[in-house]
Amino acid sequence: LPQQQQAVLQLSDDFNSQSKDFYIRQQAFRDIATLSGMDSPNANIALVFQLMKMLDPTSGVKEGEQAQVRNAAGVPERIRNMYNALLTGTKLGSKERADIRTTAASIYRTSSQEHKGRIDHFTQQAQALHVPANLVVREAAPDMTQAAQSPLDILRGTGGR
Image (cartoon, rainbow, N blue to C red; front, side, top):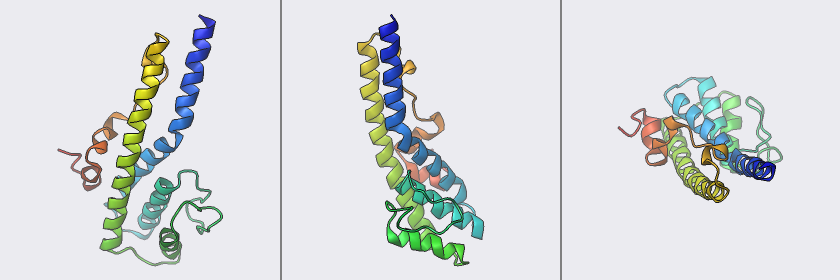
């Protein structure tokens, strides 16, 4: 039994470690869903910042500071430049806001699909150990499960309904 407990703990740690980027993206996607309905300078900065988190969950950029290549290497230059321009007073147009929503939805859909595969894999591992999967796997938040099928609906506030 102690060996089985150790195996469950190791599987759970592995699942959490491999899921870290997904959970960062999931939170950023939630924030984008909220921020995309606001059109203020601070909301625009936060909106692009959250997109950068989706593109590079391990980015070293802190909200409100300039995004440089060294601290946001995984973020395309165009997005870094947009973010840096917002810090100096530039405004987002409706086209840029729509592009952010579409990009976020696409990233979230892909990330959700990958996470579903991860959940399936670790659920099978738990079953092989004859333990409940919920001891190993943390599902995506219930309010976001529909977003995997229709993330743009979440961003539009329709929730796929």
